[in-house]
Length: 443
Image (cartoon, rainbow, N blue to C red; front, side, top):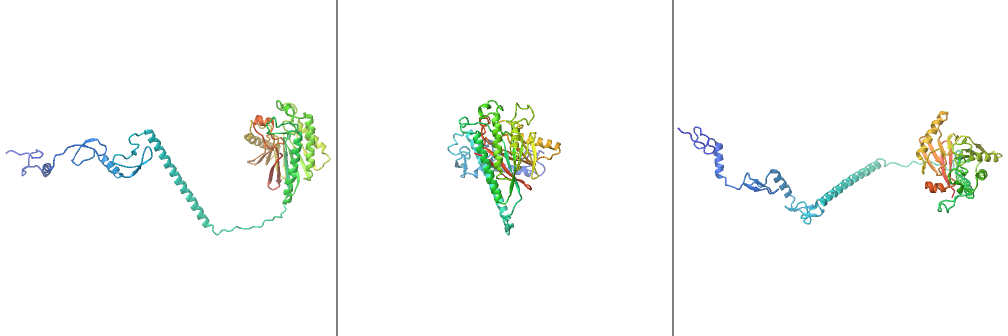
């Protein structure tokens, strides 16, 4: 007996089966009879590529294109910013990125520039929001703190305006008088002028300024009876310290020494009208040296001669005492505070104040003083640089004195620096050290 094949798959029929080998083949054959024929070639609605349809209703080549198209379709008829010019436009099915003016002539460079600008604005907006949040947080914290301290009331204490204070010492730095130097406004372009007569006038102003300041503090209850005068060198200007100096002096060195001695003695005698006693402590400068640099001892100097001669001239005035060492520096005490005075010409400089050189000089001097079992000074006094300046140190303070001259041909033309003529004046208290200070401007 012949076995019939399945009408759908062609397999031999089993016993009891008439047309189909299984229910699956029967259902499949039924669906095929009901299914209408369709065109299997289609075009994706999103990417416009051709693809083979698996069923008549398929509109997209892949699920990814379908999700993208549906997502962009939800944006239709909304506004967007043009990627090229930044103008707003209404999104359509065919135009989602560019406005109608840019869609036909897209410029990649302009588009990239606009994208960078958009990112910059976004970043600035985010930073502004963060800054505003931080300020809001600070204000909130301040308000909370004010609330916690709402019961605060200021405590009153009595100020004794008639209190008498301990005595203080006045201190004046005399240095860089450069007597004998001649500077004319014609040669300096009106920047500076100096000669012996101007030096005498500036010395007088220096004494008058001291008298006024001491009177103010004395009336305020601070007695000032003693003055420490630190003579820091370059009192005479010399003749051959730098090339061409002979053209800028009005007197030879011998006359400079005599006139400096007379002016210094006159100044100290007038200061006795302000103070009951004066102590003069001296170091020499570089303009008074005799011979070339390094020739002979340090004290072989016209400044040293001026100090000795003035001390001898005023020997009958017991109110004035002198300390004139032969070293280039001098360490002394004022009301238990240690001072170290030096001219400063050994500190290297090049057209500017050598701040780091001064730091090194102080450190090296401190180390050497330890070697001779002297504690480092609290205050360091310098001249030479013709500039008034004060600066804190790790263990004290540095004071740099101005000059009587101000600007000169050397400083104006060579260093491009013209300082105002001044001398430094300050007070020292036994408990607090330097308590007040002034730059006595002399012009």
